[in-house]
Amino acid sequence: MIEIKELNKSFDDIKAVDNVSFDIKEAEVFGLIGTNGAGKSTILRILSGVYKQESGIALIDGNEIYDNPEVKKNVFFISDEPYFWPNSTAQTMGEYYAGLYDSFDMDAYGKYIEAFRLDKDRKINTYSKGMKKQLAMLLGICSKTKYLLCDETFDGLDTVMRQAIKSMLAKEIEDRKLTPVIASHNLRELEDICDHIGLLHQGGILLSKDLEDMKLNIQKVQCVFKDEADKEKALNGVEIANENKRGQLYTFTLRTTREEAMARFSSVDTIFYEVLPLTLEEIFISETEVAGYDIKKILLG
View 1 (cartoon, helix red, strand yellow):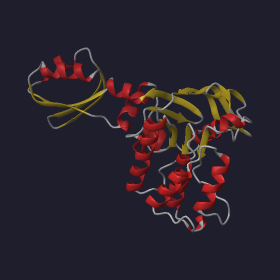
View 2 (cartoon, one colour):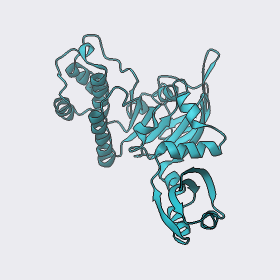
View 3 (tube, helix red, strand yellow):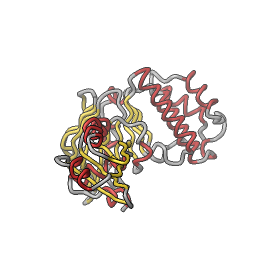
View 4 (cartoon, rainbow, N blue to C red):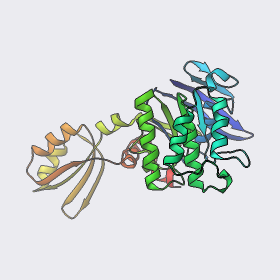
């Protein structure tokens, strides 16, 4: 388990992390969302032991991280721009990490290199950005650490490779309880993989919630009523987070369970209604508006 409590880190007069607190459970995918400069990379570097916080607590399995080699054996950090030794190849980097991590699986690494069609003897500095990202992820997964910290993991990968990486992570979680922490500025990249989301803005955390819990308690309903009296009856007493109307078609975002939403709309005379799944972006827009923030401005500038 990862525990962060009242964490602070500055660089000169810039506050990179401002009193941040959240926990990350084992074998769940935790997504850190935020624009560039929100503090995502700094938090990952603190968790990997690259940086030391100025104040607050950062613990992995109850232990301090900085200057603690035993804890670092359980952590693999993939930066947004992975570093490889000059003139190194996929083969030599695999051998290097096998020397750092006792659990590194060279057999699996070789199979993945072949499956991803990466030339193990070609110099990495001739790889494309996407190929370097793939290689970094393969090194991280094959190191067999308990925690995998990924900064903008999917940036530079095409759709097929993104899905391949997500499938690999899912398998590792199921097989050995891997705990990935994935930082991204793109909500859509994390929508189908994350269990828990933390939203960062200007060094502070605005929201940290279980994604499934959020989905259970907010619903999107499209409906055409026969008359306005039915609308009032269906919506009486329920919190409306958002309401739009195009012609006769209403679209509501309601703070309620799916069961209650269906019960309300089935109890009135409608031409038609349906309860639709919300995107992660829609959920976060609703949740952050309640907290007084406009996520569209936060994430899009």
